[in-house]
Length: 415
Image (spheres, rainbow, N blue to C red):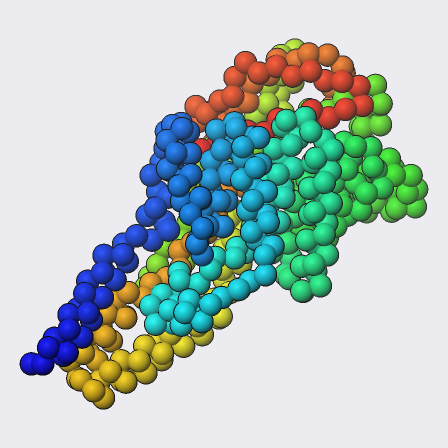
């Protein structure tokens, strides 16, 4: 055996073992400890685990920035969360550039070598999270900037003929609430109407359309909605300028997670994550109790997006298999053993792309209550699917309601 042959054989065998070792270091493995820490309430550990991953400038940076920013938001660090979300937003807007090396590597090895760009509904979610954080901080003008950014992205994605399930109806609905909070009633009506077109099942959307049309002085439109939704009973407090509103944005549970498909280890599948807490109940001292209403089903949007992309994913992995076969055959023409080892190594290194914004909730829900000006004490409690308490609580909170203003509170369940 020649020295040159031995050297090449050693390199191939080394590649074979290194690929098998690194194959275990998938995205899901890297963030699992942080997710478990969040479930335990150990927010500091989760943030600490994700920070170095988010700071590393590589093709995976965007997905880690999204998870890192979300962990900061869950921990209550809204200011730092937005700093990271702003960085993620800029990165997601960069021109997609793929080097020949990364493209070729994704065919010969695995799809995770391609730069992570994020799904359409994820890209719009960035601005929704920015808006939520600003609202929690009482920075309405900054939230309005994000409402405009949401609209810009909608126009862009509509031109690209994205499907409704990709368009993230929550972001559009949230922008409507922001416009309404700033008394831009016509813009609020337009946004509510667009949210309705995307998803007419949004819990309170019928009331929102009637209220916002009247506030925007769209008389004909108001009467049309009243006729279309005769079951909706108008509440005089909707139009009482002496009252304010408490808006609770409830992020429920965990979205589905990617794992290798049972049919092919080269393709991903989304598996729902069990969440004990399914709903939230708001108890205001001296007032009634109020239940949360579904605004956006994140789980369904993620599953539908992956399902719609499946044909493309299958075609790419078939191309990858063909590329591996061609590369191994070239090596075999010079040395059968090296070619066989190369074929084995490349196939064992192939794996499904499991990257995703995995700290998203299962759903977004809201509770909206009109209140007279004053200070109120309130509690939020998590409920299961039959309305029984799950033990998750946000207790002893106080909020000040002012006339004609909205006060926003965000809460995330993690169990």
